[in-house]
Structures are given as C-alpha cells and as structure tokens.
Length: 344
Image (cartoon, rainbow, N blue to C red; front, side):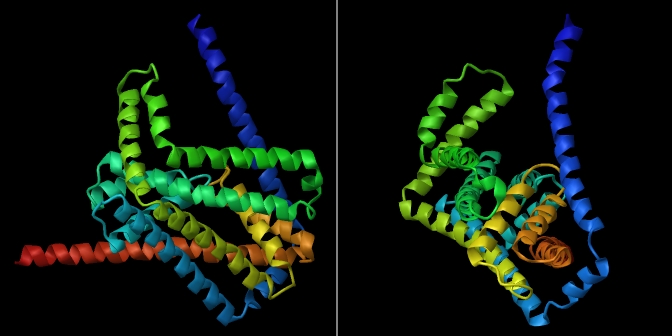
C-alpha cells in the first residue's frame, strides 16, 4: 500500500519535471537555431561597432538602476522604522545579485541570501528580514506585471500569436490575477492574516508561518500609516523597470529604427520569460526571447544577437562583476577594521 501511495505522489512531480525538461529543450533549441544560423564574425563586428560613448552611457544608466534599487530598500527600511545603512544594504543586495546569478529564474536564491545577510549585517529578526524582502519583491513584481500587461497590448498587433483575442484575454487574466494577488497581500494584509490564523494546521512550520504573518501585517500597517509611501514605492519600481527599455532603445538605435513602445514590450516579455525557472540566471531564455523578437523588426540574426548579448552584459554580467567588487571591497574594509581594533 505504501509503495502504491508513494508512486502516486511521485507522478505529479515526474510530470512537472518532464514539462520543465521539455521547456528547457525548446528554449535551448531556439537559441541553438539562432546560433547555428548566425555568422559569429558578424556578431563580433556588430558588438565592436557599438560606440564607446554609448557603452559608457549604458553602464552609467545601469549604475543608476542599481543605486535606485538600493534606495528603494533604504526607504522601505525607514518606512518600517528599522535602523538601516545605505552602504550595508548595497552589500546585502550585492550578495543577493550573486545568488540570483546562480539560481534558475533569477529570483529565488537571491531573496534567501538577502534574508540571511539582513539578519547578519543589520541584525534584523527573521520575521523582519522576510517581511522586508516580501514587501519589496511584491512591489517590484506588481510594477513588472503592470508593464507586462502594457507589453501584451503593445505587441498585440505585432506578433502573430498575440493577434488572437482569446490568447490576449487569457494572458491578461493571468497577469491581472497575479497583480491582484500581490496588491491583496500588501493592502489587505489584515484579511489575509485572518484567513491564515484560521487554518487548521499545526506543527513548527505552520506556527512559524502564522507568527510571521502577524509580523508581516504589522509591517504593512506601519507603511500604510503614510499612504504616499506606497505610491512612491510603486512609482520608483516603475521608474527602475522603465530604465531597461531605455537602455535597449539606445542600443537598438545604433542598428535600426524601432518604435520605443515596441522595445518597451520586447524588454519586459524577455524579462518575464527569464523568470521561468529553467536555467541559472535565466541564461539562454532571455537571450533567445530578445533575439527572436528583434528579428521581427528588421534586424539581422547577427544584429539581434549582438544587441541581446551587449544588453545582457550591461544589465546582468556587469552587475554581477559590480556586486563582486562591492563584496570584495567590503571584506577588505572589514579586515582592516578588525586589524585596527586588535592593534588597539
């Protein structure tokens, strides 16, 4: 009996694994097709053709993105009345970025790393750290979902499968449902907490979750005392995400004239695809989606792949290197500080 029950329990897992494998094969297949039909010398030529001032501007805008994101964390800590440090948050987010780069879908491992570092560097409790990460991520994902909805509307007349009203309705319902979920989590936390407390669950995990939900409710209420803070945070997230299509526009304009709204849509469709947990850091998924979509707007395979690779380097690999540099500098600073204290 136990064998039969265990085999039944494994079937859904096996189905999920097989579906994931199919998606990985499809994504890698598209990416491989682009690579096999691409002249690598031409790719390198197009990459080298990007002017140094343009690259410098892109790197500058990415730094603005990173510091704006760090500022968002800083303001949330202040709104939750927790002692904080802008520089320490910068280091904490650097650890999170390194973890993101090693995690499929980019978004899971980094949040765990941030919770651990918030506890260690800022001495927050597990409840406080988890609440902060949940609130920031909910606001950021809400902004991304709203922008993805705008992207679906923008590309509805450009991409064949989006021309179907039924597909557009399904996508919009799915995105709207996600947005409502996050908004309910942030603005109706009291009701969510009431539902959680009524759950007939027991055990350490259930007790911890119920206690955390109470703490999370207090934190959201603390921010809710100043409603403008929610508006500011959402606008800040929209602004941070909005910098990404601006970078793509600057880059694509070196090769072709493409509508800014279209590039806006391509950017967020690519990022949404990269969030699917297939490969570490969304590698291949992001490049394949962006390259494939850019082909529809007059760019050659070499140009589209060159653009996606440069864009990815600026927005991902450069950030990984920048994060690693921050951690190294922080470690050196800590060692020197420790040596000075021991010398005294």
